[in-house]
Image 1 (cartoon, rainbow, N blue to C red):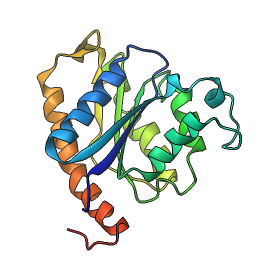
Image 2: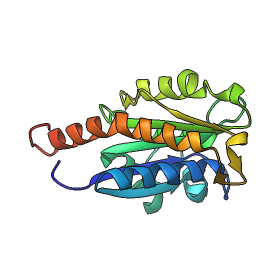
Image 3: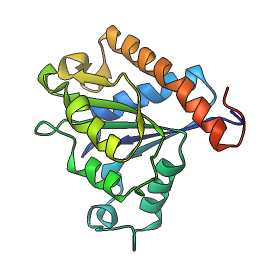
Image 4: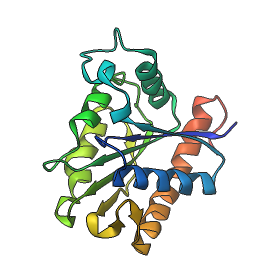
Length: 189
C-alpha cells in the first residue's frame, strides 16, 4: 500500500441521530485504529432533494456527485443501513443505483445493518449481499448486525459488538490493502 487506506462509510438512515450512524462511526474508528486510513462518513439523508429526485447522474449537484465519486474511488466501503420492512432503506438503494455500474467492481465492502430485533439479522445475507454481488463488489465474509437491545439510544452497550466489529475488520483489511496496492501499481503485499 502506498498511502493511507481511503475508507468511506455510507449510512442509509433517514434521520439523525441514528443507531446505524453510531455503528458506522464505530467501524470507522476501529479501522483507523488498525491501519493508516482517511475516513469519510456519508449520511444519505443529508444529501437533499437533488439526490432524492435524481433519476440518473446528469444534473446532480456537486455534493451528491462528490459523495458518489468518494465511494467509487474508495479502497474500502462500509455500507450500513437500518432495516425497513425487512430490507435496506430506499435512500440506501437509490444511492447505490446511482453508483457507476463498475464503480464497486472488486472493491471490498463491509456490510452493516441495524434493526428492531434479531429477526432482521438476515438482511445482510438476503438483501445487502445480493445487491453488492450485482455491483461485482467483494463483500467481506462477516457482516455486522445490531438489534435495538445492543443500544441505549445511539450508544452501543453490548461488548460483543466490539468483538464482532474487530473480527470483520480483521477479515477485510488484508484484502483492502492488497487491492489498493494493485490499483496503485505496486505488487500486492
